Image (tube, rainbow, N blue to C red; front, side):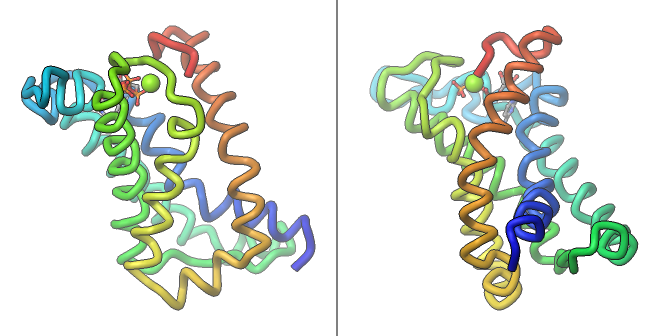
Length: 181
Ligand code: CTP
Ligand code: MG
């Protein structure tokens, strides 16, 4: 697979995992998932992880995956790359994985004394990738191995932190997010 095809494929397949965290910023608010509970003196997850954010982000990612499925044949033609279609189990679990990775990161942040919104370099940028890929692998193992070739995975690991930094900075500048990370 050439570099162009790997980059196009990586962007395409990762969109349903990139969207949820950004949609959660817009959808968030209301009751925190941890209900205010604490563990060893710190919040379990914190006020930044809400039910509305979780379901809003998850739904947005799944809708994007369905939309990409509807567009895959035409887009493959236009872009000159055979784009994969998301099986239904992946439509559901891939964006959920992204949200669970973000929640897992908040759990780790609270355990390590980081307040809500404190940066955790590396973890903030890749938590959702690791968890979304893990759930996609569980959901559809052979589809996963066909789609996430080593070349595509390398592109994902390179572009994800860059996109994460850029989108969070944009959300901060637009006044949607309290911190630029
Ligand atoms: N958000 C939400 N529910 C989620 C994830 C995110 O409501 N499950 C919203 C919250 O308003 C949150 C914002 O999106 O403040 C930004 O998300 P994130 O940066 O992940 O949260 P932080 O507030 O930085 O909190 P943490 O330190 O726990 O990451
Ligand atoms: Mg944050």
